[in-house]
Length: 497
Image (tube, rainbow, N blue to C red; front, top):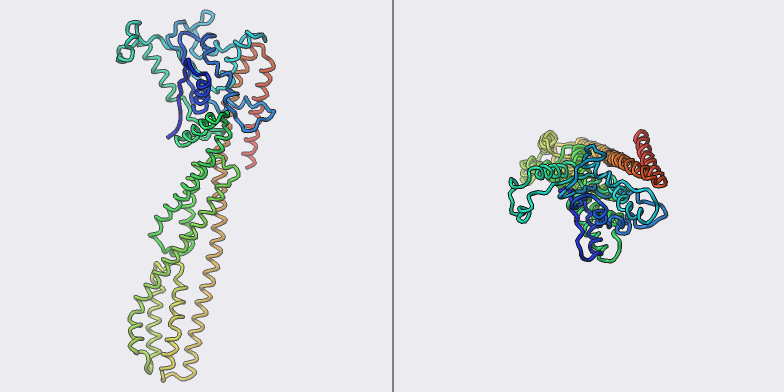
């Protein structure tokens, strides 16, 4: 669930300190901040929003307070601002010409020239609204019903409300649903319901402890929780995906197993990157790779065990007749060794062409032959039709066959080792590529956010210029230049990458 909050805040008479904290929480947790007032936008309604002038005292962006003024960054983190004027009584006109609701708001936010106390009191809330919120929208509403019906407003059906009011309310609702952005953190990371709960808990605990809520600290705490959860979710995803393949064990080759592992690891990385937050140094992703490698070794052992079990069971079935003949002593007679060799060759040929043995097929048949070494030696000695030279040749042939299998096993182990090394390289590249893709998405989101901020700061700059506040206009220009420089830098980085 996404956490796009539309918060309506109305100051009530009571504990001013509590009202201030409620205001700060509304700003911290909302993606769309809605302020309601009656009549018109005038100085009295502006004064109801006096908490906006204290936002830098109520909310900190960073835990360490440096000399650099970071108020320009508040716009990046704060919600959009929508002013709803109820029971609106004016005509939407300026200098005899019709204006839009948004133009009415921006006109109301124009500041007075001057540096006196009266001008400062007039300008401060307007400046803060412009400076802290990234988007400004206005809706005006006529009275919903006649004065008589207002007494029972909650009991009225929609059809009994004024048609114009219903149209205005529908327009407002449509805007909030379609245009309000999902709550995000720096860089465009969308906040889920789970994350919102953690942030709310962190901010409330800060307030209860008597400190000012700090967004940096809250996000750091959230990052620890989210990255730990991302790690567990990703590992669980890997295990579930691999468990689906266990029924296919043993794989015919190790490369087949490694391909399954790579597919499952890719899915796990997707899950991790989908939830991880601010893992700038890839500490948690490195931990994920370590955990997945360990799990991969466990599944590799299961694959090898499945291969051994299958092969041993197969050999027991194929050699059943031969084992009975050994116990019955049918090979302990003249010509018995020849009969034994024929039966053993039949078993081994059938074993070799049987599919599904897996990667331990050679090792198991080698173990089987080694187990039968003494039996065959006894059969050779018992066969008095064999000359001494024939016995020696039989033993040498068995040794050559044994050495050949050992060579094949060693070659297979070397291939397996090289495949494991190649898999590690592919895994590293897969992690690296997915991180790069994720960074590219974050880069694009940050650039889009910067473009939005530039657009809003240009509007703010225009207001300052009209009011003759050249220092503030120049400060805004520096912020705009900084944002443009950031985007240029990000574009160059993309070209280099």
